[in-house]
Length: 316
Length: 183
Image (cartoon, rainbow over the protein chains, first blue to last red):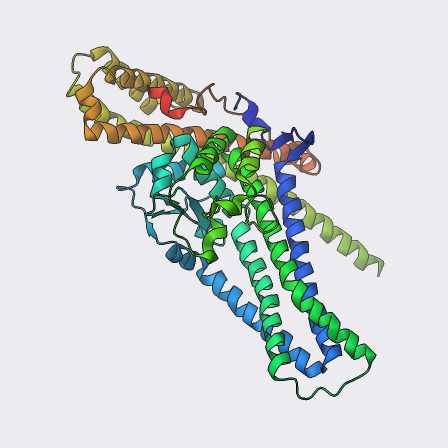
């Protein structure tokens, strides 16, 4: 895999399927730009719903709806901003790994951090036989990496380095910060939908049968209320999938060893034991989705298919 | 009015030069920091060595040749003045330790010793960290060289007296299977 001297320009990878050269630095920037565009699109959807609400009902009411939805989302993201790492670690049942107890894991994390040029993250262990791992923390100096005891038992050093590097890549690419902001926006759209549904069912007493424009706007609101949350969620998952690929590529770049991560993913794919005990809210964070079928192809998965990820790594 | 425009343009040019200057200095600091990372790990390895030698002596006291080789490499490391000497001593130590661990294979009691296992893990971890630190150093040097050889950095790198830096050669196999280097 790694040839001597190859480490000088390793950030350019050739994708043998398309024959295109991928510059990792450029990919990262392009990804970030695309992500912000998605974020703006979601904000535009929110604004459009607000505007249609104003047309269909009365401007003051619509303003209240949008304000409440944005307020709820704002509080959510503020909480996520401040406590996301603690919440995630607690929800996953992770405990701090001491150097004495987890010498091997701590050494691997320190080594990969040196290679990535980031401060050594805090290292946590989850007592669970299912092999998995995740990273959290809004910036590299606040980062934490958690792995299950099952992962430590299953993988050799190079494979573990691959997984740790994938997690470190999420931190270095600021994926965690962006994904929590995106999740908050999707959340705002869902909150808005729920508010309007409730209001239409119980509070629609003042409506006095306006003109055709108003009827049209009302239908548009109804359609958007159904479609927007679905679209927003699909966008969210699409971004999540792209970021998994990018973290794989960045991880391979950090270790200069795509094969390590590829072998680790193969082992994770072939693991046949009981799935990880993880609640729905934290499943998307892990390196592979704890529910195996959610690693399948499809718009409804937060992760790309494992086989596709392995193939991409092997082609680097 | 014309005076004002000239002033604004001048200020913009100065700000631009300052930004390039700062970028070059930042990148230079980065690889100097990367260099010190390598140093830290090499020192840590040298610190672990006496302990390792004591442990191995307890089981294989007659393997004098290898102990001397390790001691010599450690001494060379302590005496190293230039980066080149340091790198040479570091290579000597890698070889000596490789031989020491190879010899250990013949002593099952030694291999079962807890302290030995601990030292073995710590030394392969250090070896691994050295490899990563070298890799990061090369990354940093690459970025620095790119910055001073491309426009706009190339215009002020000369006046700043900044020159291209050389990459560290990474021995073949070093990065691939760090844990096997002792086997």
